[in-house]
Figure 1 (cartoon, rainbow, N blue to C red):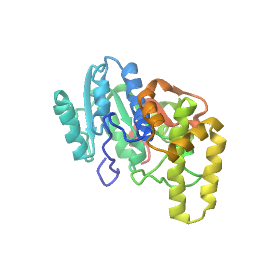
Figure 2 (figure 1 turned 90 degrees about the vertical axis):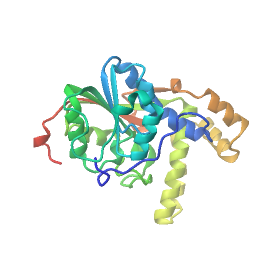
Figure 3 (figure 1 turned 90 degrees about the horizontal axis):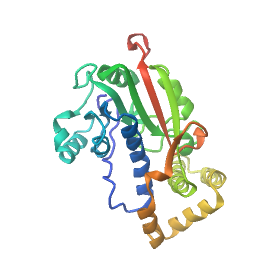
Figure 4 (figure 1 turned 135 degrees about the horizontal axis):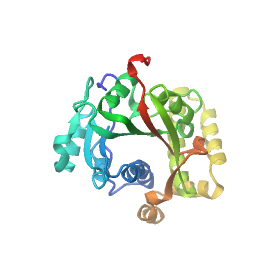
Length: 288
């Protein structure tokens, strides 16, 4: 995607020295997808489309047969090459048009936390189809709008073009792939409470900025109370009152991706969404 049809994104941390439990939880959500892909695609050739600073490539490097990365950010590509010098020649900048890789060169494309930044889907999916060997497999992840936004609301994250529900994501992907499976990422109550509270706080701020009506804040608080166990809500409130605390530092040390799993039910409550797709459709007959 050219920069005109895809927003950029800040560089993702390397997973150390987090300043808050919320930062750590968000990183673990992103990391879990790469760990899952590393297990699913052992021995296969993988292109990470939207590799950011290379933290995911470092995870895939241990299991992929061949590995490459691509990103629309010059800074991200530079950081990824610095982090992974052995892959430097295979980490490339993409600013639109035909991807800088040969046709049908990889078995799998991973594209994590990218699709919400895209406005030109035809170009995005065409580029992915270009590099895939038939029948190909693509793994996407993206935030769950049902956790983050009110009905009809535009994303509060300034880098996001569109956020998807599980149904919306499936509807989009079925326009481009014959086979689509949707999963949701769930965690234990404490883990989910922290991420839900972060999203609700951002939602509150966005509603105040856009409408100046306090009823949205009340609605978001009510949603939080209904969505989470009482004990989890109490823990979140304590963290918000006294961060960073000894409790939070202990939590930083104890939290891990082992608390997370991908499931196929209850997707409206998922922390994140994953789609696994195969058999790209003929994009010459798919409307853009």
